[in-house]
Image 1 (cartoon, rainbow, N blue to C red):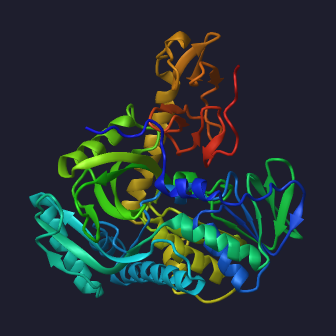
Image 2: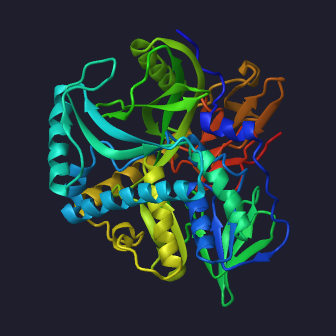
Image 3: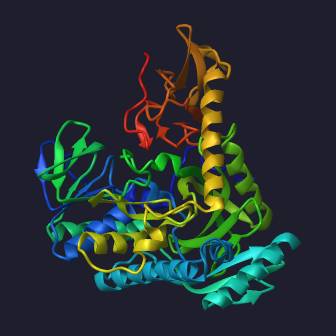
Length: 509
C-alpha cells in the first residue's frame, strides 16, 4: 500500500506556496478605521471585501500568515447538503427554520458564484450534484426519511439506489445545483481586489483582547498596539474574545482527516458523503490537468485521541481498497466547531453590544455557511435587513431539551478531561524521544511536554493550556499540542495554532 506523507500537507495551501502569494505588513503602530475584521479565512476575507465594495473603510487582521488557517484545510464543498440534516432540523426547529437554513446556504453558494463571475476568478469552480449515501440497512431507512424532509422543504433532489462509486450502496439522496472550488485561489484574488478598493491588511498581528470606550472598539494586539473602529467583526473560527458570550461552554471542537490520492480510475462527477459511520467523504479536484481524489472522514473530539495517525491509516486503507492508487501526495486535517443546536452562531456578539459581531460553529460546512455568514454580518454592520438574523442569532434561546442535554454532556466531558489530564501518569523519559517525536515527560521532577526536532534539539513546555488550565496532549499526526477541553492547539514550540487560547505555552528550557 502506498504511504501517506509523513508531514501534514494541504493541497490548497501548497497553491499559496507555489504562487508565492504577497506578504502583508505586521501592524507595528496604532491605526484606526471604520470597521475592523479579525481573521482572514473565508468569513473574514468575504466580509472585508463586501464591506469595501459597499464603500466602508476596513482593516483586516490575521494572527499568522494570510491563507494558512482553517479555510486552507477544508474539503471545499460549497453545498447546502450537510449529511442527514434536514429531517433533524425539522424535528428540532420546525419546517420554517429548516427551510431558512437551506435557503441561507444556497444564497451563500450563489453569492460565491456571482463573485467568481464578476471578478472573473479562475478557482476551479464547478457545479456538482451532492449525494449522501447509505451502505447499511439502518442508514438506508434514514436516507428515505431524509428524502421526505427534502420533499417537505421543496429541495431539488432525488432518491436513488445506484451511484457511480466502486462499491454498492443501499440508497442515496441527491441535492442538485451544488458546487466545489479551490478556496484559496478565490480568497487570494479577493484580497487583491480588497486592497485595490482601499482596504488595509495586517498579517502576523494576533489580537489578544478587545476594549470598548466612548470612542469605539479597540482590538488590542499582542505587541501592545491597537486597531480601533466603530465596529469589529470576529471571524477567527473560535471566538478568542469570550467575556460575555461564554462560547467556550456552547461550542465543542472536533477534528477530521483528509487524504488526497492520484488513482488510475476515471473519477465521476459529484460530491459524495456517507450517512454511515465512520464518515467517508469523496470528491475530486483539478490537479495538474488530472483529477485528484479527496477522501475525508474519521472525526473525533480535539485532543481526545491516543492515536491520530490511525484515522489517516483508516482513510488510506479505504481508498486503497476501492481505487487503484498511484500515490498519496497530500494529507491534512481540519478542526470544526459544533454548537449546542447545530446551527451556527452568526450576528451580534451579545445583546449588550450592537457594534461587535462574530461568526462561528459551522460544524463541517464552512464554505456555504461562511459565505452566508459574511453577507449577514455585512448587512448587520451596514444596517440592512437580512432574513436570517433570528435563525443564526448568537443570543437565541437554546433552552430546548436536546440543546440543554448537549450543554450538560459537553461540559461534563470538559470537566472529566480537565481532571484526567491532571492525574494521568508520565509516559516517557526524555532520552526515549526520537527525532520528530513528542510526548509527556518528567522534567525537573514535574510533568511537562517535550518535542525533539529532526536535529535532535528539545523544546520542553508547560502543558497547562493557557485558556482555562486543562492539560494539552501530544498529537502525533499533526505534531501539535491539543487541548481536550476547548480545542486550543499549539505548535511544537508552544505558539498558538488555534484558539480560544491567545497566550503561548510556557517554555521550560
